[in-house]
Amino acid sequence: MRAIQIKTLGLAETHTVEDLPDLEPGNHEVVIDVKSAAVNYPDLLVVSGQYQTRPPLPFTPGKEAAGIVRIVGPGVTRVKPGDRVLIHVEWGAFATQALAHEDRCLPLPDDMTFVEAAVLGLPAQTAWFALMERGRWPGDTVLVNGATGAVGHAAVQIASAMGATVLAGVNSPERASSMLNDVSCSIVDLGAPDLRNSLRDQVHTATRGCGADIVIDMLGGDIFDASLRALAWDGRIVTVGFAAGRIPDVKAGYLLVKNATVSGLQWTDYRDRQPWKVAQAHTIMASMWAKRTLRANIMQTIPLSGFSEALRLIETRRATGRIVLTMG
Image: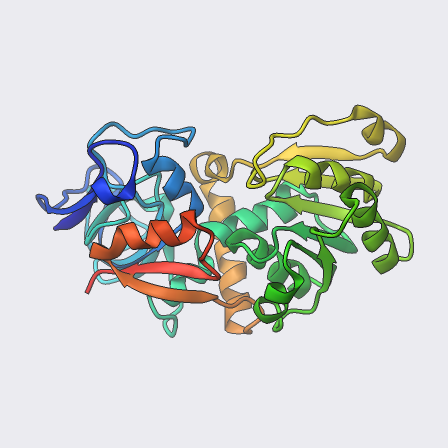
């Protein structure tokens, strides 16, 4: 097999593709022949040593992959050789073979390509659990901050498909108009002057003064602070990340006067602790894909050897859609 090998944490240019021994499954484990593997923002954090979980060096990064089951270990009952699956792992996806527990192998629709499988990957799962579990769905109005990112775009599509009024919070309305033109949503300009008041004013205008029932926030910083003021009574704000740079402090007074809730999401805890919920979400989102209410926004496919280029696109914020590594 061939795999990306991280021997030192840091710049992507120091990482190489190497020949390694084929993988062997243990109890309840599955080896797949990887056909595609989507690159996510957390992968950048992992290889640079900034992620909360640090694999022992050397390691192969990558948190999701699509492919065909090659061989199964003792005790496996959920999948068999030849099955087409998507896997979620902590690391190891950026290789021609990957190893996963059978609970983390999810079936792909027969008419879905391996590249399209990115639509059901980590960002979509994160968006689903942010809305349904941590955001205590249902909600009439959902504000998604960072709506043009991978998680944000998935959240906008899922909330719209579920019947919510969706507000897409973006820093560049011009860029957003092309990325979100296939989704029913209204734009909230996060780059407008006087953000503290302008964000609330835009949300109140769109909701007739009621505010947002659910806020999914990938940005943190001043945007999170302003979003608290835009919540409806009994509103819920879910923090998914801090792409804006500052981890915000919560002013508890807003929570008290609005009966509001602030919660965080670490999706991998659901993957590890409650895999049946992940499987249920996967099935529902696969149905959404079949109805074309959830779509894969694939910007570019890159061969495995172009791993550094893929990370660089994400690091420099030039990724306007999913970046998928292919193993051909």
